[in-house]
Image 1 (tube, rainbow, N blue to C red):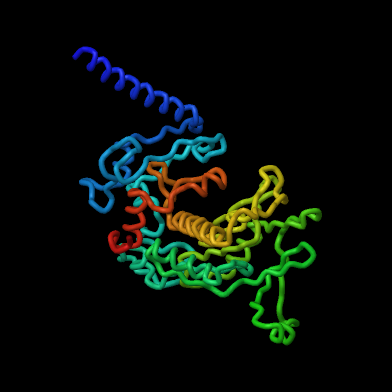
Image 2 (cartoon, rainbow, N blue to C red):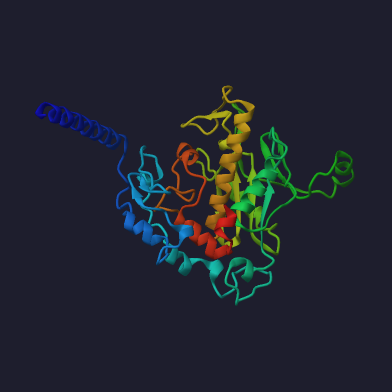
Length: 364
């Protein structure tokens, strides 16, 4: 009897030691949070949802080893370049969102020329004509002819708002320079007849003669977009397959928003899994021939959809999330961006719900 108990205790001890070693190994794989950042406790994460008592639609479930039954807590950084290893984010609770979001204000937003109903409770009620506009900046060279349509559909379902595509803004490359064509090129015949009336404006770029790779300055795009925003726009998003940069020290930028003007431009160039990029030089790009056509289409659509809804949520007043594993988490580099979730956590789902007024169950 004693020997049997000893054997059982021995197995328990071995299991506990293994679990301890696993935890120690996991701890070694992490890097410290940014100075000053303290990850929220599970109690703080639950309180950030803003439901007292907790509503079923936003309940993260019971606490467990990875955070909560239905949602993981915020991932710890594993690389010195990770988001929370670099930035001391304050986060935004549901209650803070209610106080800060300009779209929920009883006052009409600056620069908005459309109908405003001050008594409305949600964004669609306050701005009944409001739409999210998305415009291709340059042609989309995708193996999937419906790629842009899929992005529009996903974004509309995700946000619960009308999302409308606009005709492509033509960009023309000439000897390493990029020109913004003010009028769409309908056909070569039409182009010849109207070429004297058509105008083009040079965008700020940088060009590497050896690799023949160029990037477009994001600021020059935003300046042009401000002139194109429709009168009934909640926001105007330009999507491009051109590589972007902000200043000369940048390897690249995924994009930039001018929130007060409600315009933004984002590039999917670096989201293409069939390309490999240098971590040192912006102009060094190599094809990755191991990626199949099917995987390229699927991954680019997944990454592009996540980028689009993340950035539009920012324009709607939703800040980065520090409470759960969420598509509103920040990212310090592309690899971190790619591995983040597609879904909203209970905190940010509650924000979007109160802003738009959709039925949470029907949305899913």
